[in-house]
Structure formats: C-alpha cells, structure tokens
Image (cartoon, rainbow, N blue to C red; front, side, top):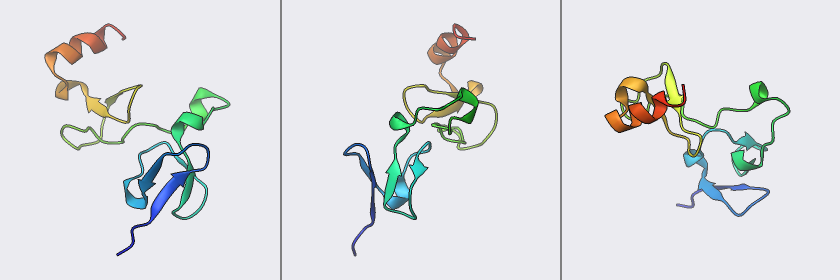
Length: 91
C-alpha cells in the first residue's frame, strides 16, 4: 500500500503523515507543513510546542523538562543522575 508522506514546504524534510513530530504548522490535511525550525514566533508565548506532551521514559504527562535540541521531554525523576545535575545548573 502507498504511504502518505508529509513534506515541509520550506526545506526537504519529510515524514510519514502519522510520524510527524510536535511543533509543526500544518498547512493542509496530511501532506504539507512548515517544520518547527522555520517558525519564528512573534512572541515566545505564542510559539507552538516543539516537545512531546508526555515523558519519553515513562510515557506519562506532567511537569516536564523539555530539551531545546530535540522534541524529547522528561520528568525530573526520570532523568539519569548526570542529567539531573546538568538540569539543576539551568534552574
């Protein structure tokens, strides 16, 4: 069967329609979007979330620490000890 591929209209990145990461601006039903790297928010509060809504370790929602470099998000308790130390330096 043919799989639907969704493509960014501003760069060559593409995903299966059901594999799109968070933070995209959908332009139509399934085939075109603008990826998060091209979205320049007017204000930070209006920026679409670029991170998952659930922890990637335990798969539960809650108070999450979000990575700035990828869509991953974690509960502080789900981080390794080394990552907890790193995160505490930014708080």
